[in-house]
Length: 514
Ligand code: ADP
Ligand code: GLC
Image 1 (cartoon, rainbow, N blue to C red):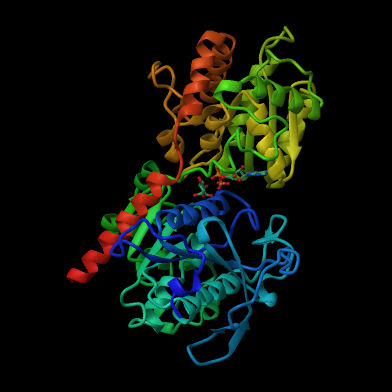
Image 2: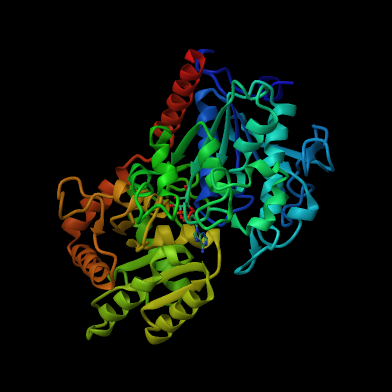
């Protein structure tokens, strides 16, 4: 059976058949089903953008413990997948496949393997990673490859994402070279800080022959099995989620130990910026926020702000700027500079009407929870730490804040600043990776600026940028055009989806010419 048979509700393709691709997109996260960060949003929106252009797209992802097939009304049309676990013909695991569809006919396959995925959490329990993550995602990578050859003949592109699926290219090339001879194996790096590294004595869980257990293949500079490194070497096409980050990761400072491996593949490495799904992240379409609004109805934003201040038990002050931050709480996200910057700015205030309010929506490492709790205890009328993961709150913070701060140390793309602009919530960002690529500083460019950008990653530089933002906010004649300009920016997937398509087609032509 091939994909065009499988996808029966596909609308007539606007693409000529030369350009139409069968794409299998493999991901450990998929919004709204399973999400810890931006990968889930990309997995939910890029495939839809491809399908809208006329490609046949299947997304494949694990059936985690919190997902109930009956409640989600998933169907079982395909036979269970037989996934080899050691070498090709040894013990197999029968993995039931559950299905649903997303917009534009994108088919979604959930792989059930209870011994690996039926537990609380995607990657771990709280802050402790599961001990068998190597085995879980080696299994999933292998399942992706088995799915692609069993149910999706004629796969033009097998698109893997991050370390969780990064072994798939090696499995495909090692076990099924001929079957995948005409398939482009793509790997997108969403975050190089997560590589999937495990002690060398865990190599056996990959099921791969011993010859791959060497530094040139899957071991990294530290002598650990490194899933991402393997993907970087075996994928035909490498992408990352902004142009800036694609350059940073080829340097010793930004390469997390893999800069040489990446630089060696520079010709195949492309930075393609993520897009936003404006059917989910736009104040005129948002199904969660108290009041919908758009550029013509900006009063709605004020109402969302008042509702948020009220909900957070902050003084409801229309003229005091409300700063938001929505984040995983990890080292990457710059909480270490945010806390002292906010502390210094708020300590100096004498007038209640001066300064700003801050809401942090975040979940992650305990030490950051503690620091943020302390900050809000010190400034109870100013700072609220909304602990935990809440999609609803993420939307409310976007709509109700005036300013969104993203103090990340590094940021491959970053989605919250892109969403914020559509909500008229002006970003304050560190000049790094995708943040630098998406936000233009108002001071550098008064006519086209969309936010405030600071260069050095330290509390003083962040405080300076926040002060500039707050001062500009106080002058509505300056603030309104800035807000409107931010809202007018178009970061929809259209362009980026097309860039991926061009890349896939170019690779196909190059292969054909070989
Ligand atoms: P990353 O992928 O590094 O976490 P992104 O900015 O690309 O960063 O994506 C983060 C995504 O996760 C956004 O959709 C954001 O709204 C969401 N998010 C992050 N933290 C939380 C939280 N605590 N509650 C709800 N949503 C969150
Ligand atoms: C990662 C990055 C983030 C990016 C997201 C989606 O988690 O940290 O910057 O936006 O993936 O690509």
